[in-house]
Image (cartoon, rainbow, N blue to C red; front, top):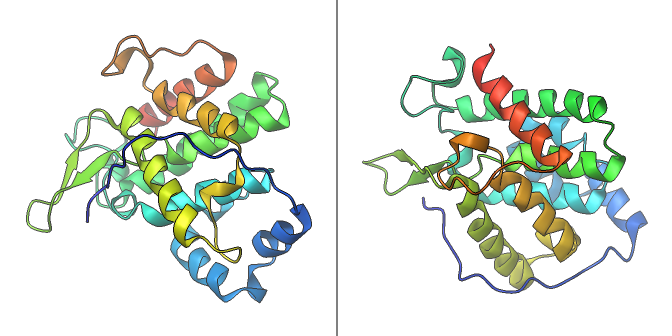
Length: 223
């Protein structure tokens, strides 16, 4: 299993043209076989995904999680020095993600973020460690990617290429958000490590940047 990286390319700006159709698909998956299969995979994070109000952003996040195999079983700490003990085991990354979303949701209220800004933060919180583990082969196992705040961009580009060719209306897809929305979510992901970023110039500047950075920092230090 590998995190495939696609050559960066301009994303196609797309808007939801039939919100009622997506509402029926995403809110009532019992009627859709594909969505039932998706929900089985996404089950550990369905409560967090449901916090996102915008159905396009929700579909975007679902599609990425479904393609990120390593995300679901890697630990949150590869060194064993950081994060609460129950996150340092296989699957710990998912538990860490749930905690970051919880704190981000609380901080969004404290910072007075509007619904769209909160959706951006929650989406970024769910995918902020999407590419934290690089998996070279079954013998080596997952390896820590210190540049994971930035490799998520390439992962999204590859997901966009796949959904552009193979996407269907009865499946989650990254194609249901605009380029601007995608860019804002990815900026939040790039800034989430703050002063510990492998690229020092990537620092939180806005309220939304700071909400995600603080949420990740708090969740990494408190059980």
